Amino acid sequence: MPKLISATYHPNIEVAEFICEDGRHLLRSGGTLPWRINNPGDLTARMVDGLPAPKKARGYVGFATTRSGKTFLIFPDEDAGRAELKANLKRMHGERTIPEAIPDYAPKHENNTGKYIDDLLRTSGIPANRKINECTGAEIEKIVDSIATIEGFHARPETRKETWVAVSRINATDGSQPLPDAEIILQRENGEERLKSDATGRFPPVIHPADRSTVAVKVISPKAKEPVQIGSIGGETGKDFNLLAKFRKWKGVAGSEKINSSSPANKGPVSYVIQPGDSLGKIAKLHRTSIASIKERNGLHSDLIFPGEILFISGNAKKNAGIHRPSPPAPSSARTTDQERSKEGTGKVLALINPTLGRAPWMPVAIAEAKLRAGEVETTLQNKINYHAEIGDGLKSLEGRNNAWCAAFVNWCLMRAGYPIENAGYPDRKSDKARAHGFYEVFGPKEKSKKEALKIRNPLFLELERPIYGAIAVETTKHGQGIHVGFIYAISKSGNPILLEGNQNQRINFSAFTSTIPEIPTPPDRKNRNIKPLRAAKNFKYFIPTAYFEQSKKDLLAPGLDIQDADELNESMNIKNEKPKKSKKPSID
Image (cartoon, rainbow, N blue to C red; front, side):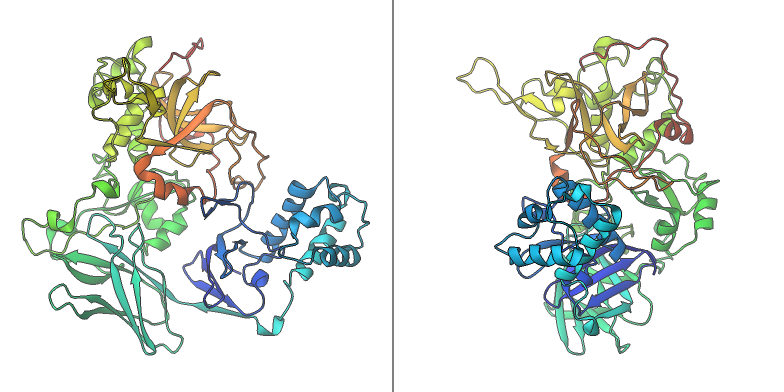
């Protein structure tokens, strides 16, 4: 079966929807819930603030929230579900016997626990006094088989149904940014359905009718206040569509079509920012092109690509070599409106871009800057760019122990991506931007009754329990004082964080640190060797811009960090990184 990469669940119709790597969708209905979601053990997801946030589970591709309100893990196939069930038994109940474990695994308020224990002991043949960790591999398999049977995984096989369908997607954009809460109407033969776009401008997928009829797509006309058809969806092949705003009107354009091709403004290059987990094959399918074409346009000699880099999908990378510092979309709070962008009144359709913001929009800025500077040391770098001066933190030089610039580099990248970096009206607001500790604490507004302003958590940044791609990692002393800062980029094979940072060996480069990071969902490396569980962190705190909070909740559910090697990253991106002959004690930044 083709690889299934993500999944969701529709509780109202009891259908699990899987998305295949080739873009097709698989619908599973009938049978039982464990079968529909490939979860033989009925494993539920850990919830944090009402959202699923599994801490140690592996292999899942989505979540299924049922009408009862419980949220279960969805796995791509039965083998993945069985693997996590075995891992869960050993991790959570390894030092217990079956009679000791089941009251927690299948609590009384949801199950007949006594019968569950009796049935499991009888069908598995495991002695009641044997701990789960003492069982052989074959005995664990018997326990898993018995649990799957008890949970109903194999029940009602005659009702099971799997259907491959064509699915189209619609994105709303003003030509520069995605439009959340845009509304469309889908008109089918048996009725109509109203949909709204999410925060990234995406509408729920539109499943093509099995009878090959079409689905009319309508929007409300701002003048007539009535639905107006702008296009239709159907056929055996799914497509990507974009709704383009034109002076408060809408125009439906298939993603593969040329838009206003007669206009010189639309003949520029189309670029794509590589996201964690991307491959050339995935990107080629997304943009309806070939791997060979992408490699040729970008001068790639292998299939190796790295998150945060920019690929040209159309146009020529060499001709556009001067575009070294992109300006990713700003946070939605700072986004301009279509009306503001259309003051000239030229009547042209706005330029189309990929409406997906992507993860950590500041990372393409940091990656491009690191590649541009190519490991140049601070003594000569400051003659070309001074990050202290760029962000206005009051320091005049990159050189010297008292002029550490790692925080200035991080703030410069955030500023370039449109995120606020200074708390107006706060004491020391400028100098805070030059300090690693400033991402954590700042002096708040001074009250008249106080002689000195009190330290408060920096309201511009939120702390995370564990890192995500692009998180701001603040290295601290044992007393909690920030001494260094950079962006989390990847994880090494030994479980150490790899940061992209400034002022490391007096350069911008990738560096691996010896401190491990909190447990995160981590995929196998390229040789499919599983990584050992990671220990709790002692040296780092992790932050994201407050304006990025909603997206960070989705990032925390993503499959962890890529496994990389810092030296290979520097070499692949032509970043020089000669280490100093003598290590120096880090200065307080």
